[in-house]
Length: 68
Image 1 (spheres, one colour):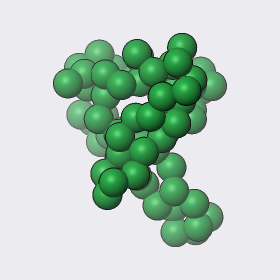
Image 2 (cartoon, helix red, strand yellow):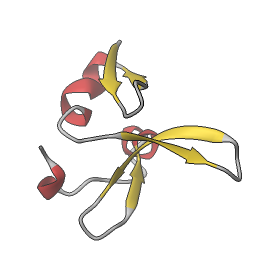
Image 3 (cartoon, rainbow, N blue to C red):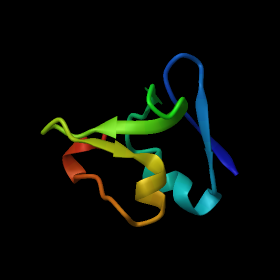
Image 4 (cartoon, rainbow, N blue to C red):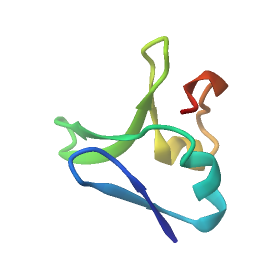
């Protein structure tokens, strides 16, 4: 297990096998007021918000142009 830094001193813990891919992107802590939960998120250049858990589960993808 490894940690990916988010903003505000927070981090997301991910499996070693997911770390290399996910760490290429800038993630932030997104607080969903309606659910009262915080999620790791990344915004695409088009303004679409992508959640880390969806990427891990294969439900969403990130474009290559987001890489740091």
